Amino acid sequence: MKIKIMGPGCANCEKLAALAQQAVTETGSKAEIEKVSDFQEMARAGVMSTPALTIDGEIKCVGRVPDKEEIMAWLR
Image (cartoon, rainbow, N blue to C red; front, side, top):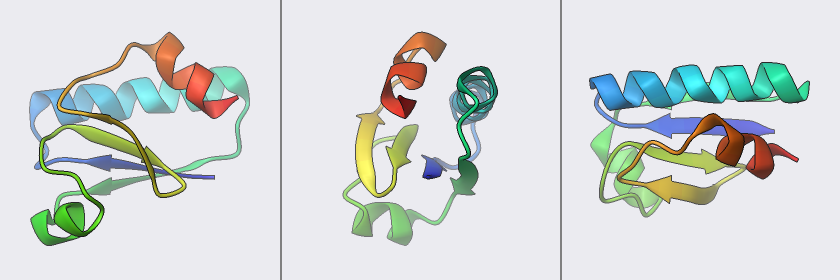
């Protein structure tokens, strides 16, 4: 499983990355987390607002920081 955190590295992007890592740890998922800050790559993925989170190429949220429980549900 591949999780991408997309954003320029702002506070919300960092918060989302930390929550994603906690969710991966708590669910025992074998997921790789990658941070993407290249705006062209984000646009190719269909992301026009940040922060955003994708799992295996599927956009799960854009423009907000979901709570840890929501991320954990996506990982199950």
